[in-house]
Image (cartoon, rainbow, N blue to C red; front, side, top):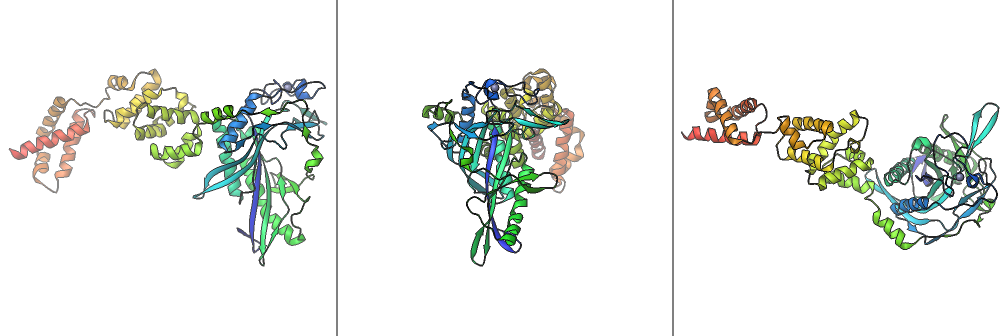
Length: 494
Ligand SMILES: [Zn+2]
């Protein structure tokens, strides 16, 4: 509930999201999907809608659609079919769009994500496949053009129930969904290229004098950024309250309205009125057979479903002791997240691996303009380096040097650490000799360590430092400590 004009107002928001699927070719023909190709160079009789051309279903599009739907906890239809949605518009060469009307590919899902210390649970009404239209080009001198390269691009339209309650929640939903489809490889999810487009349905419940008034639903068309999605919703909520105060009009059949988003002025503006379903004259496409989705295939896809980003982030935080922000960033790049898991499976110390991924490896990847996975170091080598640190055989500074050497010549870290003389010495005879030398040269400190309770601790630290110095930093500090204690104990006893 929010306060607008002194009234208690409850926003009700549903989202329709068009996700462009990462297929190689179009939904119903073999034309390649390429962004930025010469206009009308990626077209054929099918996507041009030439008479007699017959569409063929793209299996990969169906598979990606099922994968996304499974991740959204949807039920998958055993039987789904294709319908023609008729409308007349220059960028639609067939004068109809192939979509799915009454038997969508998937339905009844649930998407959960964390926001403000709670879990938002948004029900998914349906998810169906359809083809995109072409593009009108208005920046030509004296005329408009039409580019049909995009016509026939496979889209998954996801429709939520009106479960969202604020602009913030809607934006977070969109962000998490983008992350999910990218992670699954279902979509390249590039916002700049319009791979995700949002259409929120917004209205508000106004509470006054024990009565509830519901404003007409407004659909804001074609938003292609998280910022515009948030802005449009944040603008609509008070606008609808003000309009209701002025006109008293409440929601009724037929008074749903379309608006567009003016990105410059940051306001929504009225648009042509939405067609009712019967205006589209939906009917089954006679050129395409209904699609039977086999349960065994769905089971196989479910089996192959990877651990989803939110669960993985939680696990990374606890398993690798990572700060939440860093865990989130690591999971964002699935190949790198997989590499970290593989290095742990190869026996690497998890906490040190986590640290190395955030510090060493992230830095080297940045310097080289790639990802950590892009550095092409094997999981076994990553594990080996982590364990050299975890077991105290090299220190953190040495680890950075070894890592750099690993990138240069891909040798094993143990070999490199030895070659570079970075391995901590665990040769007790040698360390004992350094201890003897240090104690002999610093009689005053030895005296303090033995007989001056106020200075004993500092003196012992000083002696440790002297031994480390004599060893050139290579003596294992743990063994040094033990041998100094032993030498001091012998002197105290003598
Ligand atoms: Zn084509």
